[in-house]
Structures are given as C-alpha cells and as structure tokens.
Amino acid sequence: MRFYIKRDELGNLTCIGTGPGGTEITEAEYNTLLSEILEKSALVDQLYNGEITIDDVPAEWQEEIQRRVDERISAQGTAEDPEISAEEALNIILGGEA
Amino acid sequence: MSYNTDLQTNNDELQTILNTINALPEVLPEQSKTATPSLSSQIITPDSGKTLSSVQVSAITKELLANLDSDFIAYNIAKDIDLFGLVGTLEASAGGAEISTGEFYIASHVDVDGSNPYSIEHGLGKTPDFAIVVRGSSTSTINSFAAALFVSNSCFSNMSKQAGLSYFSNERTNNGAAYTIPSYAKYFTSEYGCLADETYIKIYGKTGSTINGGNKHFWLAGVLI
Image (cartoon, rainbow over all chains, first blue to last red; front, side, top):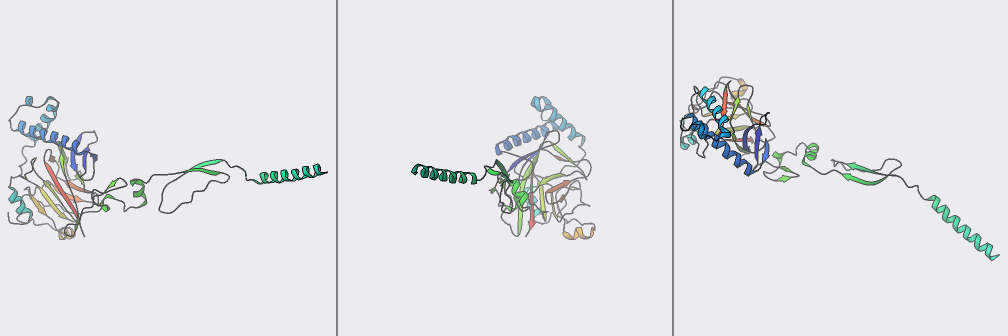
C-alpha cells in the first residue's frame, strides 16, 4: 500500500491518504500524522462542546485548535449529517428503502 | 663481396620494415560518446577522424520508459509490482471492472466551491465509469456518511439537502433533464457533487462548503470492462 501527504502552497499539511498522488511517505510517517490529525480533531470537538478549555490543549496546538473551533462556531448554522447505523447505511447503499 | 651482399640484404629488409611502418594507419584522437536507449537499435560511430574510447549508455528509468511508451503507466502494471521503479496500481478485475481504491484524512479542513474542488488522484489512467466517495467518522464505524455515486463524467445538480447517497445515470447526462432522486437517496447533501477525469475524482461544493478534518474518507473508482 502506498501512503502519501499533500501540502498547500504554503507548505501546510492538507491531507494524508493511501493510493496514488501526493508525496509518498512511509507507513510509519502516515500513522504518526494520522494520530496527530485524529488527536487534533478530537480536541476541536471537545473544545467546541465545552468539555475542555483551551488550556487543556497542548501549547503548540492552541492557536490551530482555537481557530478551527472559531470557524466551526461561525458555521454553526449548517445542519449536521444525521447519524445512522451501519446496517441502515448498508441498506441504503444496496438500494433498499430508507 | 659477401659483406656487400649482406649489407644489401639488410638494407632491403630494413626498407621493407620501414615501408611496413609507413603503411601503418595514423593514430587517431580518441573521443567518448553517450547513448540513450530507444525503441530502435543504435550504432555508435566515432566522428570523422576520431576513434571511440568509450560509450556511456544511460540507465533505463521509469521516466525514460514513459517517454518511449505512453502505455508505461502505473495502471497498466499489476498492483504493487515494481517495474523500473514504477509501482503498479492495476487491481484484479472485480465483476467486470478495473478498480482503484484509497482513503484519506483531511488535516484541518479544505474549502471547496463550484470552481475549486478537492481532488483525489485515482490512478486509473482513464476517466472512471463510476466512483464512490464515502465519509466515515474518525473511528472505524461509520456513524454518518455522505456518498456520491456517479456514472460518466457529468453528474451534479438538483441535489437534495440531506447527506447520504445520490445516484446518477447515463440518461441524466445526455439530455440534462432535471433528475429525480430516488426515495432512498434522502441523505445526500446539496453542498457536494463529483466529477471525474482521467486523473482525478473531484469533489465540488457550493460557495462556503468545507470538508472538515479528522474524518476518514474512503473512495473507490472503476472502469467497466
């Protein structure tokens, strides 16, 4: 399996993935970046939901996490995707009735 | 008398040797040349008045092969097989289609609109006949998802405002008529649509759309055979 990263024109990491494209990285690098992405995403959720304060976020991430929370708050009017079970999702994909 | 005969004989032999030496070809200056492998055999010859001391032949690289043959692409090589440094992406046929798959995570967020899509390189080397992009949660269990399934290279408008599955048929692209979304496709978001070309699956959105970070996205693209 091929692992890659993509960066924007400023060199900021935009995404990681598997398959073609991007700049190839090792699986170990991919897993390291993935852990960081997931951890940051979880912090955004927690800060957004009020479960933590910004002081609970590692100092080097505080600016980014706060910015992402602020962006999420400004977009709060958008309806969230409804949560469905895996079985319901499979039924939809297979063309069954909703 | 015999001395004169011997001297004459020696002189004759020396003259013969001298003539032989004078008849030897001139020593030409040396030169080196390079050659690049091509589709045809090549004969490397020295320039006029020179002799070849060495010929350096370029290495065969994947870039060279790609320049020599446009079919030397990853999609034409079995998946994970490395040929001259080019790793193949061609997967075994699945029910009459060549399939390419992958996943990705957005690091922070990516803004998309009607002109600026988020592009996923599918590696098929040709426009896929169908593609699926599925967004899962950050865990392995899909709690909510937005998926787009499309056939042919033109696919979106008049989408519902729910997130979920949307289906497009070939008839949709021929006459551009408004499409009636099936009853089960009630979760598709109007903010996302997909197009594809021979390189990318492209996710568009209306102005202000964002693909948020931290979620696992799975994609699949295929060419019917």
